[in-house]
Length: 385
Image (tube, rainbow, N blue to C red; front, side, top):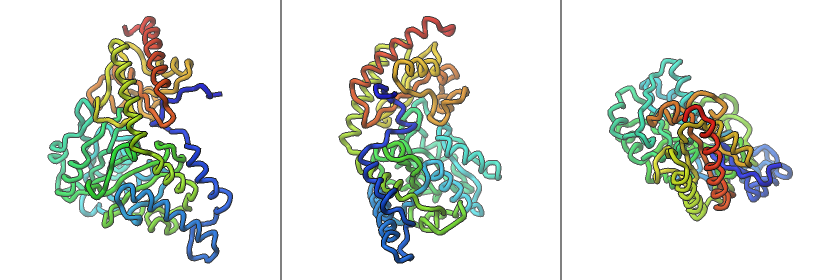
């Protein structure tokens, strides 16, 4: 049904790489036992070994130790563990949390839930490209601040934050620093030996890995109260039966992302960006032009609704999104576009194109042609023009 469909919504979900699936298959049908070394039987021991090897491989990418990485069900759980775990451990020390206004909903809504429990949350403004000013952050930290959560790269506009400067500031102020790297892991270099970050959220679904598996880096010594009760899995950090096929798939997917692939994505990103901005009048780039993830293009088309563009592109065989991946079903304007200073019209007219390993330059050119045609046709009938 979707053989000729051009999928450009890879920030929402990526296609599983066949090589990842092949790596996972044995752990569905052959080595499917509970991962344990205590039971004595060989299948459980092998499952335990492959789980730890997968953990080691992902931790190594970050420059971390295996004991500093736990597997989770995905980026939402990882961020919940990070934020709720830190405030649970440090609530006697302070009750103040800081994050940016353009964080993804796994962070924003966790913070809002903590507000209802009595924690004070400061939502930092960003500039018109989506970046947090470290000096503004510095002025916002008080003696009661226990946690700062600033994403590595934005889910909608792709803007990359200066997390090294933010991390150094938090280290100086003795405040725990969490970053959501869901949309930057393996796309942007991230080495915990060079960047003082305490907690990192990651997910497999954005790098051609399986859905339902993610991870959380926890720097050794970081105070974190166990959030979910149950067994003693994942170094007693996260209870629940381990997802062996998912862990294997996550590690394989991370291994398959290369520097060359990211360079190819960047080349296609810039080509799509340049074509649309030069060929479609009154189109506005959202986010930083160069300091953005290699797979992201986000553009507002004036005098036309982004929802209409996505529907018309879908009828022509293209999948794109308007607003963030988790928010595209809502009629409310994008909080990210509003956060960078856009009005409701700019927010409603935004369209996100996100590329992948399976995107070709021909796909990009066909998409640019279709966008120009769709926007022109919609503007002819738009009451906004």
